[in-house]
Length: 73
Image (tube, rainbow, N blue to C red; front, side, top):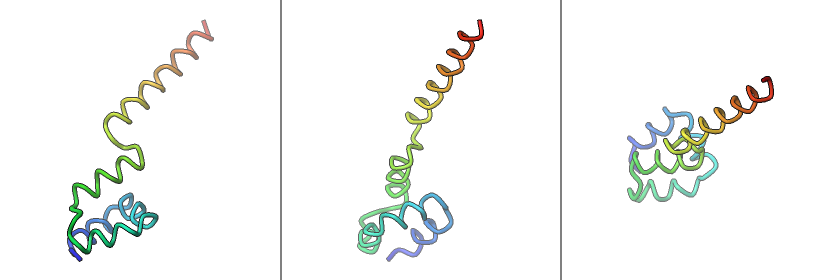
């Protein structure tokens, strides 16, 4: 098992939480088939933290603010 990846996962709260619920990934980490970047990308997709997800969330918030302003006028 790559100790750097385990230390990286434990130092990053979201990745540690992700691994807690997807414990089968430890097997892949032990086989060195997952690196830090791949693990981080998998976590971002799961928790919707990618750039596209952030943009979509901002668009939804702006639409909500616009609808509130339309109601007030």
